[in-house]
Length: 536
Image (cartoon, rainbow, N blue to C red; front, side, top):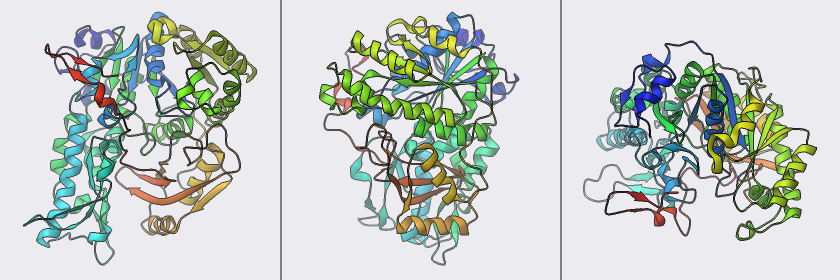
């Protein structure tokens, strides 16, 4: 790896805060020195299999490819959460010859941003319990507390717990844990542009209600300053490098299926101000990541988008065509053809959001020549530009064809799915019908009550951040391919008033994932020489 100071200098970043030899924080004042000039390239995907389709690898490889074409590019990505790292997905730093480095550091503790978010979140949780224990203002109704605890691990046993047991154990009450990346503070870090805005958003977090039904916000406790102090360095973007020594900014990590699934706006500002092309990734498929990137991120950041890459794989399309996981490595042209309907639907979604996609066929070693050839024919028949991505095997050279498709696309304002001043119900139904292709939306009794509360509190102008499964265009992970004739069920609405989001929970979605029967953590080890191995 190159010294991080060299990586920074190459794009004109003069002031960094080194974290050792190959990592650095970028001070806030450095971000705004240059005017915007870089074009924004969004990388999204079809609905994935549980093992991922290489969207991060494609993002990194595409950014490196621009350097091969004589253009400066910065890739911006979310920080990996330890839950998925130790769970089913593994690491989130790319693969093969298209990675961000030092990958072991990035996948594990990195610069401590997630730890800071976890502490800030749980600090607020503890003072809430403490106020109830001492019976002091603001004393919440124990049954109407909306702020639980977080942990950066997959732990289904903590989804619902009882706290305060034992001698002088604090207030006894039901509580719950979410994964740290589902914390509203994760979203706040990702969308705040300075410390003033950070404190303002933290202050506006809705934490519950008193017995008289009046709302209680984080600002009603005297710890917002302490929370912001813990988060001081976490707000600063992290500069690292790709496997070819080009710059990468890895910052913030809100989940894509239960949060808005994008790295920080500050990271994007660095890409737009210090390079010709910002290549940035939106989590999971275009139904989740691209929709939220357009309707939330680009609006808050107030920037235009130049192009979109839609990642597809033979494996995922066979999966959507009916092949079980254990048979995905076997050649199956019929399943590939059947599953292509999912790709077609995602092309439609990207076009509805205002962009003509470039399909990147991410080539895996187990893909047969016959399968790759047939998929190229299918995509060509869909009248869309495409390229076979070989970045895993060949690094930036393997993404040159993708980058060439993107070079001359001019920035344009996206097509927003809803207007911010529309009622929350209408905004949710617009996403469900226009993006997912649903016939309509069904509302559980709890969701109807939540909707009335949202309207009563004047939060109708908030952004909509849908929480649903990533595996299907519907809210049912088992409905693969391109389902039709379905409805979306809203179980409840979560108010994230600090971030300015209304989060509809669709179907059986959980904000605290569980571990698989064989967690990825079982393959990780530390050698006698101090080298981390087995982290995938």
